Image (tube, rainbow, N blue to C red; front, side, top):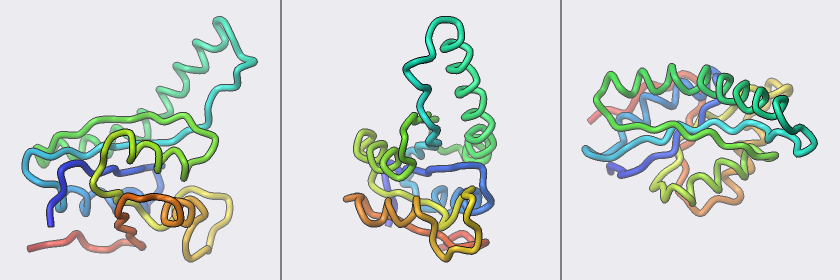
Length: 148
C-alpha cells in the first residue's frame, strides 16, 4: 500500500535515520514526506533580541537534524518538506503534526535520543502509539527497506 503524505519524525538518532528508507518505499508517486523534528519551545520570559537569537538557534538545530534526511529523500525525487515543531511533549508534537498535516501514516524509529538507553520502546514511541489516530509504522534497529 502506498501513502500520499507520510510524517517522518526525526531526532538525529540512528533509529530515526533507519526509518527514512521505509518512508521512501511507502510514499505514493506524487505524494510527499513531511520531515519533522520536535524541539522544546522558547520560554515566554525570553524576549527582544535574546528571543530572536533563540529562535535562530532553534532553526539551526532543527536544520542540522532534518537536512541530512531531506537530502536522502530528495535523491529519490520525492517531494518533502521540513516541519519544525515547538512543543513541550515530543509525542504530542508528533501526533498534532500528523493531524494538522493530514498525514496518512507516521513512520518512526522505536527509540530515539533519550537519556534512558536499553528500553525496548522509548517513551515518545509509547506516547504516539497510545494516543494517535493515524497508523504508525514502527521500525526497530537496522531493518532493511521494504521491497516489492
